[in-house]
Image (cartoon, rainbow, N blue to C red):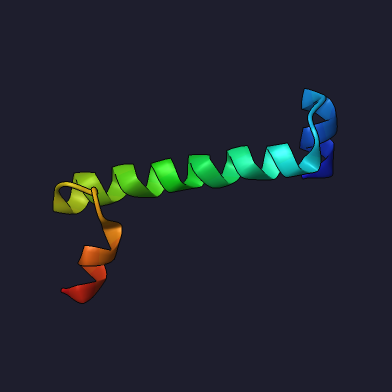
Length: 47
């Protein structure tokens, strides 16, 4: 993470935050593709 943050000239916290949001977007996209609307991913855990 440090290398990526340094290369992009951002703080490690910013880099981590952006990565976390990107991961969430990817998971939401995957859930939507597989199961339909991903508006509340927790609802899939109840099935």
